[in-house]
Image (cartoon, rainbow, N blue to C red; front, side):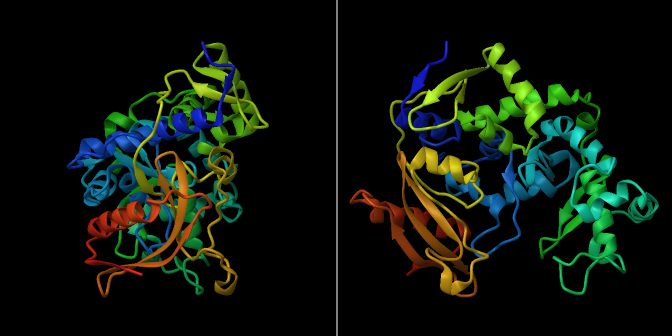
Amino acid sequence: MGEKRLSLEAARRIALAAQGFGVPRPAIATRRHLHQTIKRLSLHQIDSVNVLARAHYLPSFSRLGNYDRGLIDRSAWGARRDRLLFEYWAHEASLLPLELHPLLRWRMQQADNGEVGWRSMRSFGRERRSEAQQVLDRIRAEGPLAASDFENGKGRGGWWEWGEAKRAVEWLFWAGHVTTATRRNSFERVYDLTERVIPRVILSLPTPSLADAHRTLLERAARALGVATAGDLRDYFRLSPEPSRRAIAELVEEKILLPVAVHGWRQPAFIHHSARRPRRINGQALLAPFDPLIWERSRTERLFGFRYRIEIYTPAHKRVHGYYVLPFLMDERIVARVDLKSDRQHSRLLVKKVTLEPQAPGDTYDRLMLELRLMADWLGLESVDQ
């Protein structure tokens, strides 16, 4: 039976345990550790910013410590037989375990119908379908191609000003006709036919109904979050309210989700029936801006009393904490935020600014320095400089 009321401290510990915190990091992180971490979280978000490290590498570092980033590269973009992950739109652009592919085919079908995706791309599912077909035919004939391999693939203003071929191939990606075969040095996506990339054993899995897919995705979100509101659960895979409402009601009826009132939360919440309920959480971690523990900013405030906004797009003179700021989790609280940059040319991890939170414990700085030294080692940087 679920609890009727839950203290904020207990909710925080449940959430941290669900996300993989509070357990010792492995001495040597293996491919199995990595896959378990990504399976627990269901995805690692992808982002183009590389001031410190690519975003999809950071959640596993927060939980595993000094692991080989090549494990992710080979799992996502290596030989077909080695693949454990695929790219698709989930929370945002994400790396996901292969077993989630059938659960997202409904979104691919909606994109194929021109119902979802960026507005500038939706016409390829309707009146401009023949143009997308020409791009698809060329990939089928020539093999993996990037948007820049097409004459009109790149807009004059750079990647944020897409050419028509880029829009077409991104629609093909949304619709599931192509997927990412690999990434080039600039992190540019290289596309190939889905059937030449995703293992056959995955493609042969049956496609669940829309209702069943929503139920399973929401259940996975609940496992990853531990305790969450309905809005938190929907946000994890960016699901629509109405089908999610029905799915959550069914999960509650089946006692997979247990209703709970978290002290201080205005909205009712749900706890996954298998969630661990530890008495304490020990350890520390630097959290990426796109880490699933904190990516939903209102939930971060509810859980930790920590207001966090990324300031990348804020003019420099208006930034409060810095350009690429990572919150520092210590035991059960977020106690500091750190503006970091990888100075690869001089092999330095630059600590541009450290801001301690009110009532941060006295050993915060010392433990933060240990974590920064670990991060520098993981990134292959020789020094930590302030």
